[in-house]
Image (cartoon, rainbow, N blue to C red):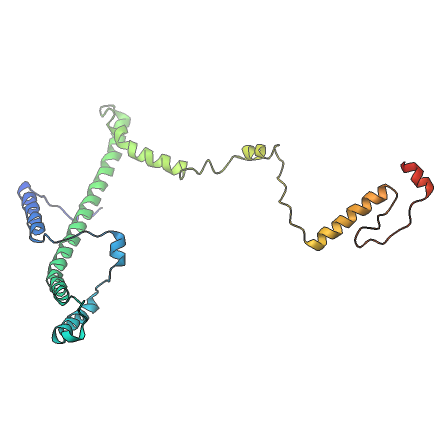
Length: 231
């Protein structure tokens, strides 16, 4: 049986008071800014272990301002350290409150969704025996039908990139024909031997051997009968 972690009611007065408190907090901190993801990544991150380091650096800077260059903004450094020190407590309290707000929202949403699934199952059973609900069950089931269709269809474009066997065979020119693999580039030595073999083959057909082919020994010219037959 599911556990009921939260059972509360937010009244209109409570909701209005919370909204007013948030507005008051925002008005009390008008200097708050927004940063982009790129800006956040480019900034120096002040961790818990660096707070003491920053505080000691400020003490040194205030005690020995002569060691700092003229371009160093000591007042701006002091204001940043004081702002961090005072915002630390507010930030901690706000994070704690936001964490509890997220947990409450998550628990209430989970319980509401689980109850909605039970209502949907009971509505389907009731709809099989009676049509009193009309199109209510179909309207509730559209969400699940859409999710099931997405699971069957797969990711976008997967059918277009995977042709059927017959389509793939027709793309080769005939069904069942396998495309020839790409020819391998011959080395220079292999190219010379292949050229020599082609020259010998043509010379043999003409009853003569070419002496100009590289790597092939010279031979006598064919007999007169052979010469007459080739004329």
